[in-house]
Image 1: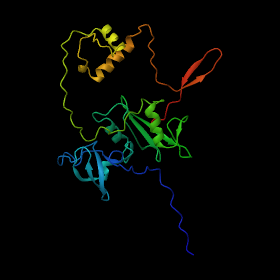
Image 2: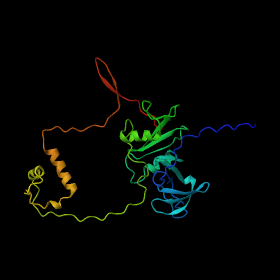
Image 3: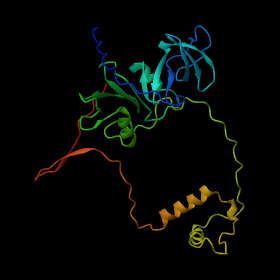
Image 4: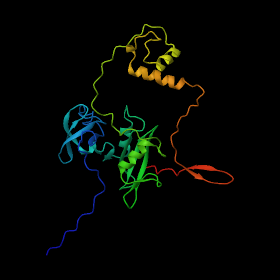
Length: 276
């Protein structure tokens, strides 16, 4: 009998392609192509492209924002999975994309680390772009802070999208989320003009207490109030109904380690994350 073929080692984790492909799996343009020095660019930096075919070093793709279809070399794009996992770009290009106009605070991406092969980095736009190394345990779980581990990168993203938990800010939206087709411009609605006397908030309060009453204390056609305005009035009244009630604002949770001491109690911040 012939020698049995030993199976190849499993490749690094790669997410399965997303079935809808249009929004979550795409190509991100890293630089204008062609260069403006040669001709007017067909695709511009930050555009999202949907793959039509792989031509071996070149991609045939269509822009999700302009609808233009053309070829582009692989070195000018990065493959993106799940909308936030970027493959094929380094730290400098990550910063360029995260600093594009209209990019929100907290926009982020996960990319392959340049300084530590086989690991990932989380890049986040804050006052400046911050980079955090994502380490991997022998059991293939991930972590940024060693006190908190995640079975997969998606769990990590979900957690830090809810609470900063030591990062510079909460993750808000994947990088290039704004780089989609320009939404249709909504026609501005005609403003409603009220030719009535100024509001008397005390009368509004009585109207709220008896909304079904036959008498209208303001003498205003209630059909002129939009649902949003009524909600705003209700919110105002709920805040001013009891001036003596204390204002309770919930603070964002901060992860702290408590060190008990009979003489003195103190709090210490957790160890800083590894910045990449």
